[in-house]
Image (cartoon, rainbow, N blue to C red; front, side):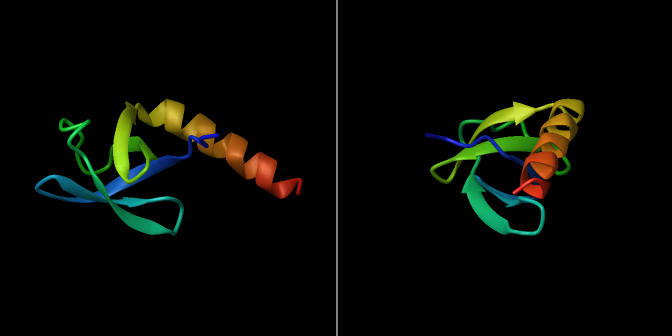
Length: 72
């Protein structure tokens, strides 16, 4: 099972981006989404950015995650 949690791109250096999962930061490869820019949101799987989300889609997803986590 894969959980799709948006991560915001904070820095880009070559084939890698530093992304932020709401406080947890991680370096991921962006070879599958080479068009991403700082400030964009992506979905990460197995250390790779696999999908670029628009900001509204990311905001809605993050709100749902906050709601889910607040009920546990």
